Image 1: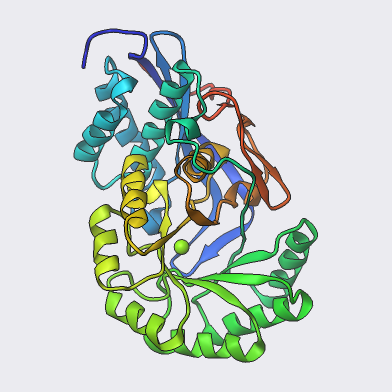
Image 2: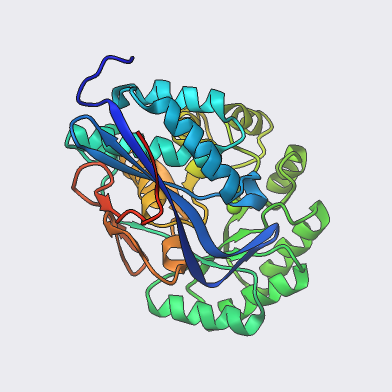
Length: 369
Ligand SMILES: [Mg+2]
């Protein structure tokens, strides 16, 4: 693995990005007011480069920016001299070295994959087979906020063409129902993905589903209503209310996915490269495709670098029904050149090599070579 060829990693740069969100990103389990992420840039012997993004959401994966940065430096050092042609072997090595840093591993894996594809002159989605290369719609997230702000955000996004709203809920079930009611009354053609981020009990979940039913809102998908280990509860909700449920926090690995399938605890798995790593996400998708469970894909608060990798999975692997790939739209600036584009609620594929993105390095970047 150490013979030097054109795909050998010769240099890795790391720097932080700090981009405020337009509104506080409030979910049941935490709050972010900026994407405090880390960019990894890999350079190969042949001069090809690759970008990846580490997007730690401390409340969800336990990773902090400081720990992630230190871990990324250790992982990067161990990758010098290896070939990106062995990206799956490298992903396994990263998993062994930093099992509790999925977002960190994900960012580095993304940079390796991007560099590999640029060296081979193909888009990242082509590496995964180009199963479904077309424009796709994403939902748009309305964070937990008061009714007035909920309606103002809903109106802004509706005017830009969004019709599938991802409602963050889980602090107060009556207020959650009211927030859906006011959107439904103003914009009856909007439907909802609802994400309590484990914030419901079986009782409040039942109250919520019945309450939204009474006000007439259509819930297309209820994501992770219950604590991640309550698979029996999730199976009970599905059977009792005939409502499609997506497992998010319950599934970080193939082992988790197998458990959810065995318990018939969900209709969908929400893939996220930042919670599982890129290769493990592919493994979960492969398992899901050979079983009866369906797929959606989401992300953390991130730019079009990490989200480009997720969109490449959508285009390459195929069969991913719901896209929750909206967080670049929630940031107050976009530092990324190139890559996929947003046109209203639609994501447009790119045709250039790798992720086809570029970011100028930060003056204070750490260089490992
Ligand atoms: Mg979720």
